[in-house]
Length: 254
Image: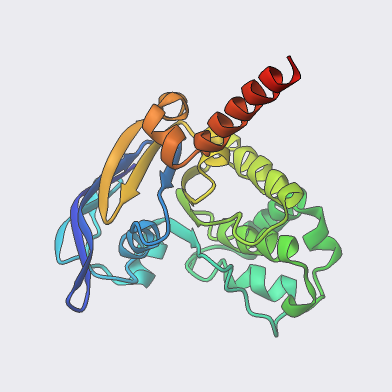
């Protein structure tokens, strides 16, 4: 569905992406992982037309979209839930959701209503709070609203940029459950996440970025078992320290 080949993106004199290549097949969840500054959000912004690549090709459903305007890419069927949610705090929940349907210029009222009902089915709290203003919602509710707004575009693929950022652990669990549910219902997902373990637990495959390059690419199961991933992204060093401490404690007790 989506193929990125050799993308190079610059911020002025600074090269942020250095030949990124990745692909997403229809029906998959693909995780894009890496530390801060690795190039994850820049990749999303390049795919969605917010940034223009200096080199490379971005193919969506067989069509080269590299260099297209963001509006055209949205209309082609790519929706994005950006980092930080970016909902409109002075608008109601309902108005924010309806703005998500803006790219669907030919959609009927019945189609929009059907998708509203779908969003409310996934996030019942949004229906309950549909007349509330954005600033009146909690962090978790804002993330639900941002994802719901993305779904209102009824796109072929949904790009999620750091959906767990700033959320309490119990809310993070719920957000990832919903992402999996949305995928099972038929939406292809490219998931950008710093929480590598959580992302890989629901993903089919993953790509790991480091300083603007793809350093690892494999199935989610293989990445979870990869020693380099464990050492740098999955917190395995903490488990090693704990095991060593347990051995020391056992010896001391003896």
